[in-house]
Amino acid sequence: MSQPFPTIIDRFCHYEKVQPNKLFLSEPVKSVYQDFSWADAGKEIRSMAAWLLQSGLNPGDKVAILSKNCAHWIMADLAINMAGMVSVPLYPNITSNAVNEILLHSESKAIFVGKLDNPEIIRMGIPDTLTQISFPFYFNVGCLNWNDLVAATQPLGEPVKKDTKVLSCIIYTSGTTGAPKGVMHSNHTMSFAVYSFLESTPPLANEVFFSYLPLCHVAERMLVECGAIFTGSCIHFVESMDSFSKNLQYSQPTIFLAVPRIWEKIQEEILRKMPQQKLSRLLKVPLVSVLIKNLIRKKLGLGRAKHLFTGASPINPAVLSWYKALGMEIQEAYGMTENSALSHSNRKGACKFGTVGQSYPGVEVKLSEQKEVLVKSEANMLGYYKEPVLSEEMFEDGFLKTGDEGSIDDEGYLSITGRIKDQFKTSKGKYVAPAPIESKVLTDAMIAQACVVGWGMPAPLLLCTLSEQAKSLAQTNLQDHLHQLLERINKELEHHEQLAKLIIMAEEWTIQNGILTPTLKIKRKVLDETFKDFYNNWYNESVKVVFV
Image 1 (cartoon, rainbow, N blue to C red):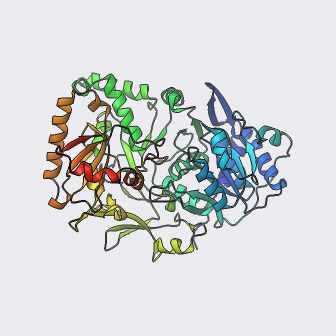
Image 2 (cartoon, helix red, strand yellow):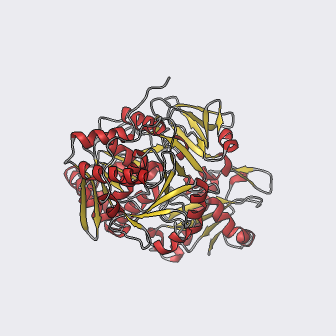
Image 3 (spheres, rainbow, N blue to C red):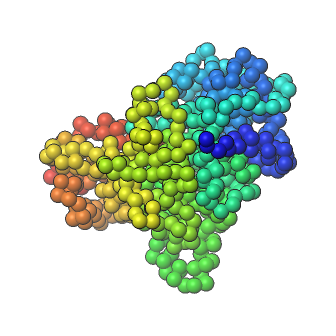
């Protein structure tokens, strides 16, 4: 029988008792920080848990959370768990239709509504049958008021006892491969993941976490929410992406996670202020080098950071090497919603750039005959909600099928070489794997985003967007550079993989235009559906680099 681990509620109650007056959550609201100690938060969480139980809901019922990251997001999640109910976190920037679909599919009976950009529009997707509770600082008309409910309800003494291996959370995937699926997790799967992570990391205590990536995403939930609660640490929030730099500088986190696109944006910002030539020159002077590195880290707000992580999608190894030269070792990690984000990571001081590191303790890993990465641990999901057939198809002899193609070196470092399902066949009958080609292209400083397409075409096309650096070049110089890039990449590829054209898209791919997921991964299907009618015309253009 597997070892029972303390749950997130066990750990919260422990720290609420032993360090009641210590800072737990700190959130800027209109530039004023609202601070909550463990005792402050505990009172609100316990009162809300009691209210949920008194409202006619029962343990096991589903309760949704629809909000950007904020202090009461964490409190609501803990209150739901404390009441023995199942939390259903939603992305705060999805459409009202998607909200409706998920709430109906999950059979949610109540929903917490908080910090949103367009609350009136997104709330149109909430069925009238659901009880809506509004967070403090972000009151929504027609909702019950969190503060009123907490003030009128006696705090719950003891959390509802439930089997740690039964359903406690349904995390809906962000939809890179089609309609979102409800991934079922228990308190045990998540606790196992946290303890395995902590076992592989130098002791963490009194850390400062910075929360800005969606808390409904498994990486933020596991590293930031669970990481802070299991180690008695505190969480600082970002007010908005406009105030990101200011909030980061204020918080000075000791643990920081960013997705590749954010690391790239930070790099672009640094190089905008200090061009590479000048930076390289200064880094060669011993004393100046130390001062420059410290100054950059401090200016970013990462002066105290012990661990810097990247995940959610592949990162260009050149970006990691660039940060390493500045004294910032970024640890690339790998995981998915279906395994509580627990699979592999590069450990501090032993990073191999271009790999996603070694497996965590308690994680078995092997490759199938097709080189698909298969992982097995107690952090693996219970299955997909209401999808027994699909759930069964995801496992092979107890191993989770990740859908990723990989290779493992003799030290156990895993490299992800592509997606099994992303491969496509050209009209010549040859298969093309996009990811390795995209990785080669993204080493070029002029390219910001890249996606190889071409199902049924004579040869693949590369859709891409330009970096800020590229936009500052003269058109002739840029065209020359892109032609040389295409020539160089094609020399490194098999004949059937060689790119027919570079298609330069005018508009950056974003969450807002529906091409990126909330964690900034490219939705290949959406790109394909949006532009496939143009592929033939682009292919037949007389020039190799097509601007659209």
